[in-house]
Image 1 (cartoon, rainbow, N blue to C red):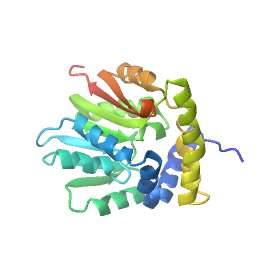
Image 2 (cartoon, one colour; image 1 turned 90 degrees about the vertical axis):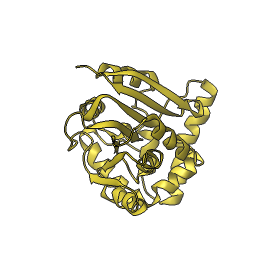
Image 3 (tube, helix red, strand yellow; image 1 turned 135 degrees about the horizontal axis):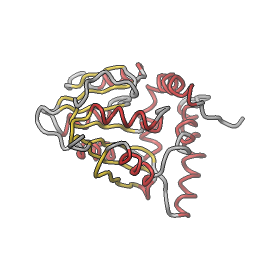
Image 4 (cartoon, one colour; image 1 turned 45 degrees about the horizontal axis):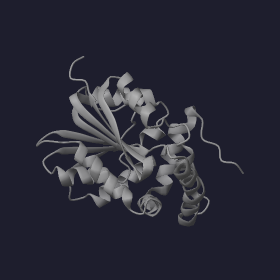
Length: 239
């Protein structure tokens, strides 16, 4: 049977439910499909925040807390908050971070429970792709960032070299779901993950979108020929 992505109206509930189901195997899955490289990319994300003592950082769609832990390790004097709408993911995050100063909150990325201009940095790993309204999500992130604050987003990208793109698509759409099926038989979330990249904007398109919603100095860093990418954008300092 051909897999069908959830509709926009059903996407948030679907993603929340499915991430709850795979929480215990999610990190192992990421280790396997990236050969452990995702951990380096997340440390790179943490470095891009440039946090100073006492500044606040939000790790949005934090999952099991890899990026939040990387941030607090690199910036031990910062205040880090992790938000995710999957309770099981947060449970794993809290268990693995019990001795670190990270606050975990269950919440919706499109309706964040924070005042305007609250955070110096927002990090997000493989989360923008799962929002049912990308523009609304970016505007909400911009709202809670301080003027001059930074957004650092890790997600899938588009490979531009034709031959490498063919190989990447075969791996991402054929091999990755098989790895997921081996970890959790009959779990369709591991098919959703590559399929969800089809409608996600490429690197340049996302950069333009960041600028359109009011960010500045938007740029990106490609890894593995662009199969994975990190966008860095700053909130404008003036209205």
